[in-house]
Amino acid sequence: MDQPTDMKQQILCIGSVLWDVVGRATIAMRAGSDVPGRIERIPGGVALNIAMALGRFGLNPSALTAIGRDPEGEELMAACGRLGVSTEHAYRSDDLPTDQYMAIEGANGLIAAIADAHSLEAAGPRILTPLIEGPLGTRAAPFEGLIALDGNLTHALLEEIATDAAFAKADLRVAPASPGKAERLAPFLRHSRAVLYVNLEEAGLLCQRTFENSEAAAAALIERGAKRALVTNGAKPCSDGTAAGVITACPPEVLVTRITGAGDTFMAAHMAAELSGMTREAALERALHAAAIYVSGELPA
Image (tube, rainbow, N blue to C red):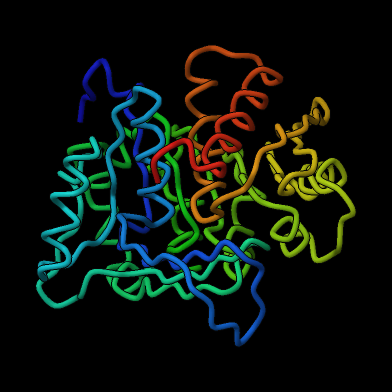
């Protein structure tokens, strides 16, 4: 099929679009803590968090995901529309419930989280139909724009994406969703067009070793075959590694009021910065600044 002339500028976010239920306390917590705080339900999921952040940077993202036809799904579809995220090509199921994520955060960071993305996993390759059978692309005429891919997909589906001709010309930006799913990204260590966005722990899981800092982790991922890897490390220096070398920058110091969604904001800000033509150094600084503003609570969730 022939692609529209502006297709190269379209951004697709593939993965989880769900409801986040997040409980936050302003004091430090440990396992078994029972403390006062605030609980909120907001649209979330890695793919949607990235898409919402891209929207805040003036871009027009579209989500490829699975959303149920239950009341929660209808409410989520409406929320996505209000947030400027297109769900026109989302897979809608009568049999699968809308996914959800639950997290507990204290002043000392994320205490625990459970991701219920079983419907996304059950939908499997059906969420990719618009990229394989049109209208977004086919294997004969692959999509050529930016794709943000999250690790909530099954290992088998991620392996399929890493080798499918329908993704051969895309600029793939890949995030693991959580340390527990980091190893699912192993197929993209061999992908010639994939950029990995991971934290220090996730980098260690992919390389099966422990790192002291992001610079060493980024260099190791490149040695393992990654085309490019960005490694964050909380408030400590973040690194961007390629075959040409590793660059490092420090996040701004801010008062942290939330954690969930910070990595997704960093990734989206970095993508937006590079789309605008910024250098590697400037894009890394811009992404760290945006993530710092987000965790300080100055940007909407």
